[in-house]
Length: 358
Image 1 (cartoon, rainbow, N blue to C red):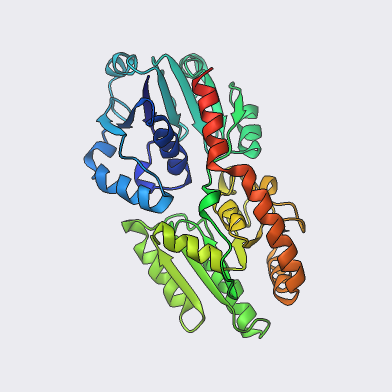
Image 2 (cartoon, one colour):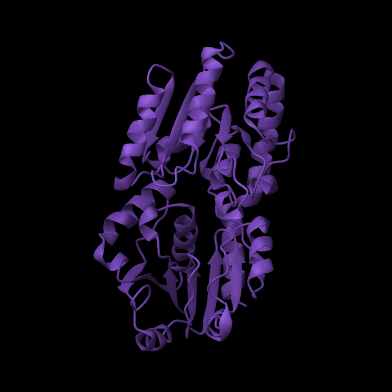
């Protein structure tokens, strides 16, 4: 079977790209898989991008072929119609845009609640009609999309290599993982730095450190430097583009996981749509103290396998509660490890193969 995989923002190597590249990795074992490059991506060093993705996400992409395709802006409609016919399956991570696909089976993936501007009108509805199935990364995303788009589908939770993560000898560490996105600054790393500094200044925590890790592109370097300056003088450590094995160790040695994406936001697009890093932390026995919004609520049950906070005071309160009560921390740490098993890479593989074998 010939399979095409297209994600417009391949170079960001974020959660959506991990999702799509994992599909590519799994299907390439027994099928011919092509990673499709639009005119923008075809100008980049794809080999370097894929190598980075392999390191960051622990993937084996050696069997995947890359091919320039008539996709994206300024591409030819007719060329696309003829080109896509050769694929038995096409998986597309939409950025909100649509195109009419002539592949035999077409699966569109929604990574977050995109505003529906692409399937309006006759032409938009025709384009959408070519997609056989939608897959969503969470119930949160599914609910938002199915309210606004005339398409139905199923939730396929993102793949998390839970077996790669282990609870190691714990240190008094808080960790947060998310891309250092200098343009949006949506992972709220500065907020977390400010909260930690405040706890230190108020002498509420001693002997603890904060560790921030995530991918960083060229355009994000200034933002990372800003964060480093803000953290100066405090036990705060910043790791851009940390190799996977080092990230595994960081999770394993840390006791508490912080996550703040979506704080102060009301729009679904600006909330955490699932929370891969939250699951990775939980698999490592790192107790999540995460914002009570978006897909996080599907992963974390408050005071059972983690904590859900609504404001900064609660973030501080729950963190201090875990720091001061080792028995509580141990109980929730064990529960979080058990919960993380529901989002394994094996479960993801089963769900994807059910789709292609239908």
